[in-house]
Amino acid sequence: MLKIIKRISRILALIVVYIMCAYGYLNAKGFVFKDGTPVLSNMAQAKEEFSEKVKGEIQLSTAQTRIEGKGSAPLTMYAFSSMACSHCSDFHNYILPKIRRDFIETGKMKFIFIHFPIDAVSMRAAKLSYCLPPEKYDAFISALYKKKDWFYSGKKEVLNKYAKEFGMSDDDIKKCDDDKKLTSDILLTFNSALKTFDIDGTPSFIIKGADGEELIRGSRSYDDFKEYLNKRLDGAK
Figure 1 (cartoon, rainbow, N blue to C red):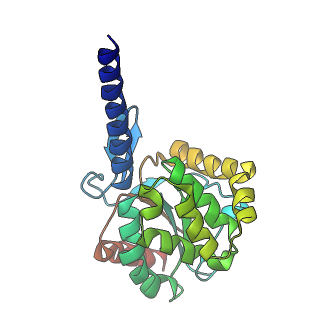
Figure 2: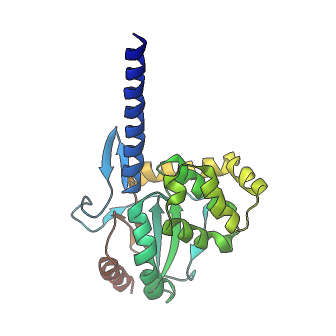
Figure 3: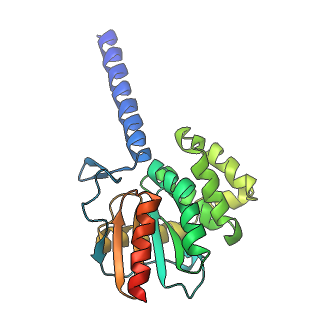
């Protein structure tokens, strides 16, 4: 009987490990769970239309507001991203630099990165980024997107290592982890985006201009973004 119990326990343990690994893998690939079902958030499963009209207020606390670009820019891009999402990483590493060069630095568009954490590890990374001085915010996010050891290891110490490289002490990290107000702010933004705009996967983008707001779901090529943004700019003239 004892052998049978031990065997059942091992099987159950393997099942739990499998589920945890599968969940982490799906999150990293840009999946989110909706009504218990994994939903892929990338260009293959995006709607046929490149964008859709939306309306509503994007709720961001002062601590979450990091604006890149000129205040007079006619367009604003809000990028909803999870730090664990590989499609978000691809956008940040390969597409955003071109958007920055052609649209943000030229005064055509402002850019606001919004954390949309789809797991506990991404939530912690989001909090640490907001606890850093504003001038280190972008560099910290870029560093985490270039390497994923902090996510796959599952160990706080690995993520702490990156925070310390950007100047945070053990006390700073603990204070940030314990900041319930910041957690509440991130969750408020998350829930508001989910409810108001039906954003249920990453990456997602809201482009705001004089002609209103439009939502883009999933990953896109730079050429697609460029064509779309230029059309929005032409319409704003």
